[in-house]
Amino acid sequence: LGTIPALNLELRARAAEFARTHVAPRSAEIDQSREYPWDIVEKLAEAGFMGMSIPTEWGGKGASFLDVCLVVEEMAKACTVTARIVVEGNMGAISTIMAYGSDAQKAWASKLVLAGDKPAICITEPEAGSDATGMHTRADKRGDRWVVNGVKHWITGASVSKVHLIFARAHDERGNFLGIGGFLAERGQKGLEMTRREPTMGLCGIPEGELTFTNLEVPDDMVLRAPGGFERGFAQLINAYNSQRVGAGTVAMGIAAGALDHALAWVKEREQFGRPIAEFQGLQWMLADMGTQLTAARLMLHAAASSRGPNGSLFPDPELAAQAKIFASEASIKIVNDALQLFGARGYSRNCPVERMARDVRMFTIGGGTAQVLRTLVASKLLGWKLPQTRGEAPLAPRAAAE
Ligand code: FAD
Image 1 (cartoon, helix red, strand yellow):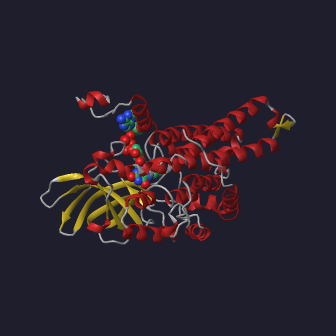
Image 2 (image 1 turned 180 degrees about the vertical axis):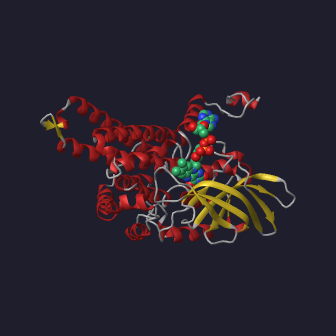
């Protein structure tokens, strides 16, 4: 597991103050209006919370993922959308670019993220969800550029993100398949447009959209090249999801922490049978379970976040990240659901913040690798086997695979 370094309490307090002052008063309105909170983005950038994980030579603070988690939790207690913007401004696509990008790519992405951009990562397609390698989007080499065509959906930040990391099947000039590669593009480029916005259940202030690429031209120097090249690079590029998973798990855990805070205040205030409902042991034990699950989730996420760095690893350990996301997302859904229960009918009202939290938190066992698919990843690590999911392919132990 490694060790979890001491928490930066000053940073956490600063994030909590920011969330209290700038975010909490806006969260209900962001949910209802479904509008991207540009005013908060501007303040996040001013406060240095966007791009804080970018190394100092590129203008960031070189903050650890553990530091990012502290900020994300505080934002998520107040507003899920804001927390997700902080995740994407520090983990996921931006950390992949900082790990494998050329100097020009790093300079381009850092500048935009430090100014407040939340990069979009474009993997999922209508026919390729959990089976991401089944994607159809293709990039064809034409001289010094690549021509990208295809459709992605459920892209967080579609139409608001500037930096796009697009995964596509790369083909050379003769049409030979080279492997799946990462292609960088910017909002406003010809051939990149949002063709539909998904009417989501929660997370309403950030668009989840369908992106269509029509002869989108990406210069060769905007191809994100992992050391394994096109042939083996996809697995390396997709490693970015380990940090994104820790970030997403932390958003879920932060929502649960916020819901528990609301519930604790409410059970002391609400009286039935002539006494505060907090005096009923049935509710005390619910609260105890909620707090216990929350602490376990937080510790797993902090351990996963801290697993980047030792031994030169560029991203959190895949097994720890997957375990933390499975546990945190499932525990948080239960915690928030129980918090809603403690509010009685009031919890079922759109006027209660826990109602919004219950809709928001539901996503986190789905996006960024479902809880089922992540269990397969964990099982594969535990067994030391590859576990192909296509019909007809048997599980491959490393020894059997070599024979
Ligand atoms: P499917 O793959 O169709 O799965 C359906 C069900 O089958 C699930 O329960 C799944 O767990 C289960 N299942 C599938 N295969 C297996 C298997 N082998 N074993 C066991 N169970 C299995 N994608 C992006 O590229 N970029 C984004 O920014 C992004 N943001 C998202 C934001 C939100 C709010 C959501 C909801 C999704 C987002 N996604 C994004 C997409 C997300 O990554 C996919 O939804 C996810 O990978 C699952 O794919 P799917 O929805 O097509 O489900």
